Image (tube, rainbow, N blue to C red; front, top):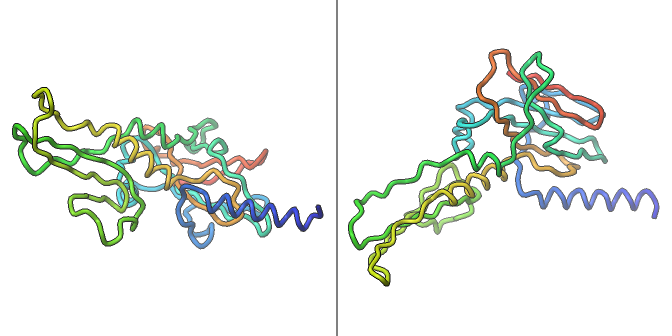
Amino acid sequence: MNARKCLIIALMFGSFSIAQAPHGIAPHPDAGSYSAHAGQDGVQVGASLLTHKDLKKIFATDVNQCCLVVEVAFYPPKDNFVKLSLDDFMLRETGMDVGTRPSSAEVLAARLEIRPVRPDREHTPGVTGGSEIGYERAGSTGGNQDPTQRTNRGGIYQRESVGVGVPIGGKQRGPEGPAEGNRRAIQAELQEKGLPEVSAWEPVAGYLYFSVPKKSKNGYELVYMMGDKKVVLPLK
């Protein structure tokens, strides 16, 4: 197999990987559109540290409870790719040598909680209530959206239901706890918007979640290891 055919197959595989990526966001036009940007071996990287106000607009989940979020984008050189892995990133305070690795959506979902929606009616004997909490991509419900479904920022929703009756045995069945639904909905939102771990042939972007107690007055640096080479992006 000649080099040309190998390159075509590699390009097709790379395109397929991007198409199948379960998460990520639309990158800005170029790396210079971000507050910090740098280049290494033809790869351009842009990054911005999001503010609390930004996070409230972007996420239905209250991410401010647990971590700092960095929006990062990669722009590979023509006819080449960049391989992305969360293990290659670190957020550190300016002037420090050690830092924090990104947290996975699964880990953060276990720490975060969505405030449940309270029913508008008082609970009465013989009436059972339940709620379903989940995550849907923006615009996925179309024009047939259930009026009892409350959607926040095109993502996490809670649907309430009410039924009348007494189960066999005469014991009243209470509403199911929302904890598991909360966790799954939070994880789905964070995963979809997180930086995808792929071999990217085209510009790709997403969010990195760092479990950092509080914002440093000295600022932070996003460190990205490209093989044995280090890219440092100063964040304010």
